[in-house]
Length: 131
Image 1 (cartoon, rainbow, N blue to C red):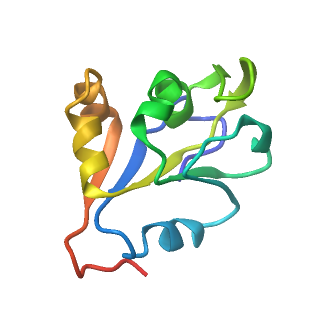
Image 2: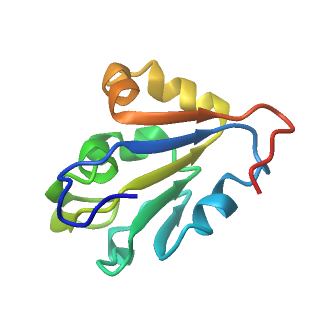
């Protein structure tokens, strides 16, 4: 976790592995959070949480806002499929729970090098359950 107001950016935690291996359950056990599953919804944004969980959200859906959402860079403009841009204070670290193919998609995207540097990647093997 981060030291409140002393760190201006955080690295995103990517939990990559097979379905049903406890990635989201483990992430939810860490404290007060907001969780987005399959879709990111700006309407559900909350300022009173310590971190964000993104689970099974296609990279193509969040890549335009990924840097602002995943690295907790302070005041950022975010949007989703149904809302126009909204300025939010994002000081929350993010945990991204994805399957292997989506992890490969991110790493081989045009921003793959950025996410290799600004993410912590935890690969899980089949049978290596977290929770």
